[in-house]
Image 1 (tube, rainbow, N blue to C red):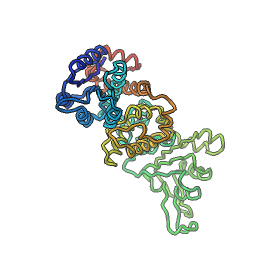
Image 2: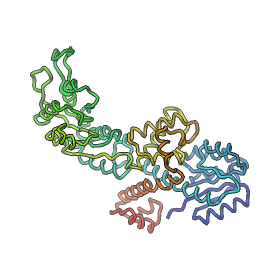
Image 3: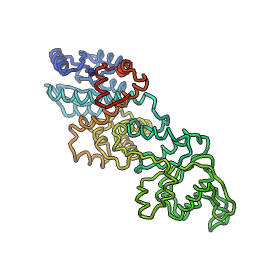
Image 4: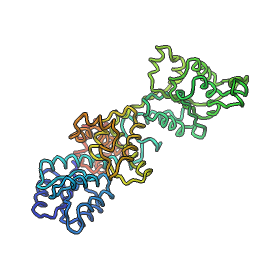
Length: 453
């Protein structure tokens, strides 16, 4: 079992010894320092899992050490201890990015709980960073996902992107259906051809046929010149029919004819046009129900869904919430030129607790809102939108992070082990070495996560 490393910096020799004795007894690898310069020098050489730091230190004070440490490791949990006991002191260090604050005399039970949760958070972010730095199983770098649910989607796509099968993507609004459609095209044999998008819900019904098939000059009022339709534009490429369940029944019949014959005529034209295009469709509707309600043609459904793929919602992919939140944080701090290192534990717990009805798109908007609102180095719960805060406040967040990280952490561990096994070809000795764990620990985790190799 990996032992978490704790750095202690306390210039009071008696308190330093007390902390060393207790924290060692709790099962941590403890290293003690007596001044800010020495601990900062050691942190620059290697990253501990948790730091316990007095605020009043010789040579370099605790605030300086805190700020410099978080520049090196933005997600490093630093627990500040102080004999000042002022509320303003606690607020100041929390705004600077401290994990938590403990007044002296130190409550050892509280410290033990903080260390346990901080070590778990540190392990979680270390695993995520390791996964982020490793190559993705699926090479489309715009898709940020590591959950097992999305890996299944990636595996399915990898099997069909070099075929001409019609693909139907099922998923809620905001899960990234267009990104996956682009991946199918740009990593397939048609990648050098056009990729054309049609949002069937955004185009007025009376104009959709013209958008699909084009029209000749004078075909109807306002047709001042010939228009090339989307299917003709997508010749030798891929056409993506987003929200295909919104299509009018009369147009469904014309689309079915095109799929059957590969031909069509522009509106007002007599020439028959032949097209070679792959169709990828997407919907957030249950098309089987639409068929029962006579709103969608069954024969068209079978033409469009020779290869259906279900994209799971974000609330079922806890690991991806963390990866995406971290990615969006970096993106928006760069855009708005802000120095924000991480999320506080309460903000992170609130993200994990939230159901994200708007999926990835909503998470992106939430993080952008938080970055705009944040005036410190760490995003706090108060920086998040009202909807998310209201959801968080209806439940106790005291132990949420401790409880909620079990699921994503297990996902991350399982994925890391599977990835290492693939790299080593199933060599357990080498796998354990790459993961920096003992073989007995590896055997236990293989059994726990039911990993077969």
